[in-house]
Image (cartoon, rainbow, N blue to C red; front, side):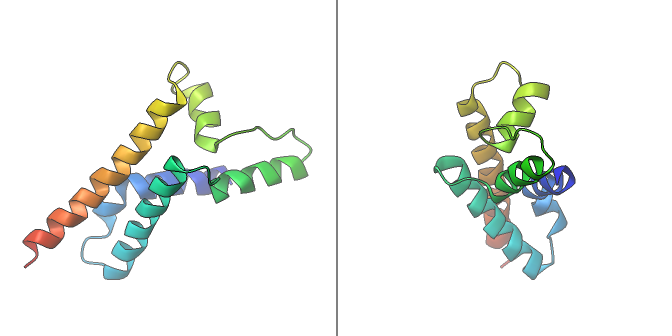
Length: 109
């Protein structure tokens, strides 16, 4: 499940590079970005986080509470950053990708 979460993160961050000239993948990536912004800014849980917790519980491990990214990044990469900074970074990455699509659309004519 960790590999799926990692793929999702990479897809959200770099998807605009992989979708050029692929309308279906572009649509999927834009929907992924919108979903990412919604999950970051609302109380909705990430489905991958819920799946991670479910499988950990099935394996007998005590599931962690909160978002997967906070759990992983807080312990490994960003131990001293508040959750709000990670939310801002996540939304910024999504917004930057959406700006790339807007730029492509503008100059594609």
